[in-house]
Length: 264
Image (cartoon, rainbow, N blue to C red; front, side, top):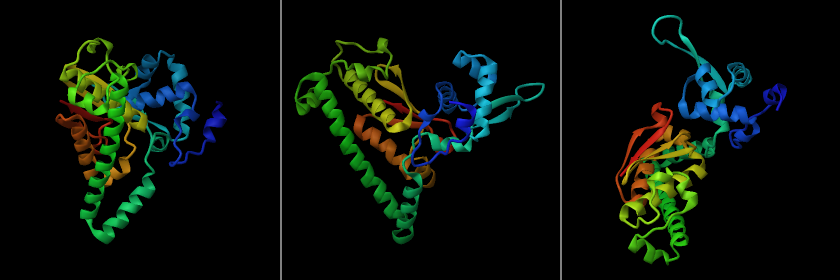
């Protein structure tokens, strides 16, 4: 894709499509999305590219407002130039039709009050939880060859290659049929599902029954930024699905570059 082509891109917030950029630009944007703020040297090192090449890509992205530069004070001397995502970048990562949703919620609030919003978010949580449970049960059923109800009662498990992609291979045991292995499968399935929904998920194993799930994108950012209850219901959703405590330590709506969940 040429410089002129990328400058002419018109991004529609209701049709975000990061695939319209070249691979190098996509890699740059995803890296900045995950890391938040990096220097030219750091970007070049992470991407295994020359600083000149990365600088050219950054210049093109800056020209359309997707990337912007900042200046960080690191000890003595002049501030270091670093790069972060610009305001326009919000439109190229998955979002859940924010403008329409916010308008609808504000209308409901004006007519019925904040209590109606909380009730709506609760009903939404119940609806999503039901869908998640059905999909998870089907996934575990196909994994085990048993009927879903029998499988969930016995909590026995076999490995699923697609779900293992979200976990370190060394952390999984092909013969482990304990409750811990069952929780591992559920958490792995949840990470995979959320990633498919546009949350850009990474899952890390802390120990046999504790996990760290990172979500680098928030498709419902505009809703959560307006109504914090959306974040509360999301945490409750995870706890209800997994059957273990879930603690939130970082939130994108609180200014962090990631939503961080400690599971177990």
